[in-house]
Length: 205
Image (cartoon, rainbow, N blue to C red; front, side, top):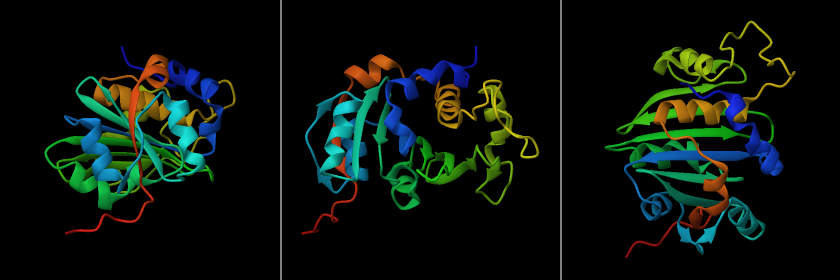
């Protein structure tokens, strides 16, 4: 059975501040330390739960926290775009898959999939528009349809309740693609290794 946006409406209810901006990155066959080392030049303290990750954002705007979910690591950045930065993600995706969801304070959105150092799919689920040369790369319309969203850019896109459900819809697409739905327990009790993606690059000896 496919997941739809309706399976993830709890996330916005539990964490209303994510409507400001959010970037979530799923990395296959990786542990949180490896992912944070790739995303953040400066390591911060490990904390329990998403709320504690966000709390560090008052001092570190580029905060990103990563926790294990089965054989994947899920990294979440309340304000940083590191999870859709190709300079970071393309090398991180070598030999594995990476799925990222992103929503900005200006309502811009992106759902992207990388395979082994190459972009596989990248599109805006609000505008229903592709960011890749192949406009249908990764068959993203099917990903949207499966998640309960309408991929047709000629229609309004609102769901029966009058909302677009872009963020919860992207969580559904990620769950259907990876087979791993994020849960309320994961975001409450997960141990998040944290780093600052905006810190100066590490000096090389």
